[in-house]
Image 1 (tube, helix red, strand yellow):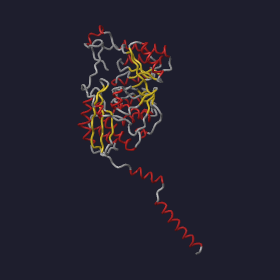
Image 2 (cartoon, helix red, strand yellow):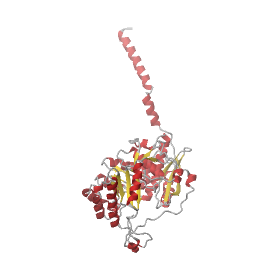
Image 3 (cartoon, one colour):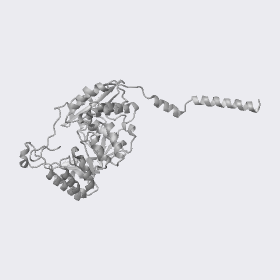
Image 4 (cartoon, one colour):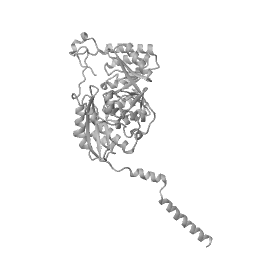
Length: 437
């Protein structure tokens, strides 16, 4: 064999070897192919609504989505405590027929189609119904993959979630005593208020026609300023103070209020203005350095987006189920990051433990997280909802279980049926005229 023949032979062998090697996938290619193949399709087979009333006026609405895979289901929070049966009807009569037979992985498509299904969109009842289905689908995704939901939101950016406690009492010294107890437990943020300062005396408000004293915004503002002054003089500035106004003052009073508390440096003042008056936040931002949070009353993006984009608020304080659930809240949080607006999801007792778990997964994965409201559930609620996020020393912690990490014991929940069909908010001024709650 001469040199030319040898080179030709070796070249042919090299090409054959290269071709053979190309047919054997590398470990990376093997992994990529496995991911691209994905999991087998799983379909939605049923949607169930679980109603249970615990902790007096709290009417929980829990949505359970069942699948074609035996034993696999997801849970979501659709709780609208004031109108639970309206939400239940929306789930059972409209969303359920719409999603049965759909692939459980089609979370975004289902959300978008359900959002426009009523034609008029952005309503709180439809949003809560959508939130229940949406949360359940995220729960299923995590369970199928064996991962917590926060892993699909980008993973944890913090190991624990700072929370704030709520302290309200009749007398100033009682508020101080409760705050010092919370500080000894490790809390650094506390929401404060006086339970007596929002009402006039009964003799001052007979025109209201109510059995309880009516609200007096002027007195409320004065007494709350006194509360801030008392706490700062007694406790100092190491503790972060939060206060919720609940939109009980006029825009002009809100501006005066925000400027009056500036020396006491609150962590934020929440809901100084009603949703109908959000354009006034532009004037607040120009005239006060007080941090502003808005608002648990938001139900559609057109209400909060201008406030974020124009940097008129410091914290987005929306009620997650009222805006459509986890899918919408995660988009809102990412939008806020670009404008350095932080999150502070609304989370009182009227949010089910499942809703609190959804808030927590958002918090773990949100870079621009601010603070999380806590609620201490009763033992009966914790028994019915195993996996409720645990709170110790002012922090909420993850159990790192797949999905949302929380379940419901339906047998226990069934022991607490609704005692009524919800309730109405009723507040009035001293002259008997209606007041926003």
